[in-house]
Length: 265
Image 1: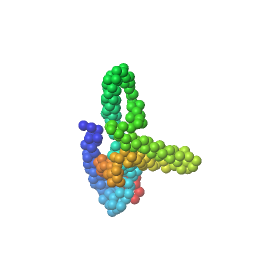
Image 2 (image 1 turned 90 degrees about the vertical axis):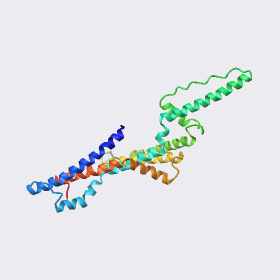
Image 3 (image 1 turned 180 degrees about the vertical axis):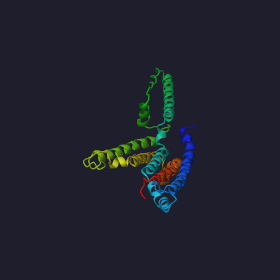
């Protein structure tokens, strides 16, 4: 069982436990208020408690965690839907490498045959290529494209343009942080309490979305606005179990805070 399946198998039980705990909190708070009116515990079944659950609970549940989950789901859906990670997978590079090596061997064989027919000596032996690790990526990404290979020309162009988009976004971010006006820093010029810290997840997610869309458009994996919208919604769909679980857990958590008096009416 994969990690993702294991997490998905646990989430329903977490949601159920949160729901049961919320029901218990409702009943216990009412019972404590009846038996011990001066205990300071607030009942969720009182008029005030019911008004709070209907009017204020949805408001306090709309936290940065929920917004961050939404942005992350959009970014992951766009990234994988564009095909950018898949084009850098080692097995794809190996396949492309094998294909190009076979073509090279065939061409070399043809040249040797021609030289033998003409009475010339055999050509030079094919050089062995021993690139490992990241150098293999650079060889297939930056070498002159072969449109008949696994790495199509459009994939290379898409990767080049995605790098340009990433550099542009990061350069702009660096300018806003370290430029003359330090717009994204706090009033004291530090990261503590600054705009970039409070909006870091949405900001990084937006950069990932831009880079992925640029790759998809240039590599022709995203051919229309509908395609871009579709892969974004696929990301949200993949994170849907987390959203549902969050609603149950957050509702239980804030109800308990209200009962204990930590949330103002």
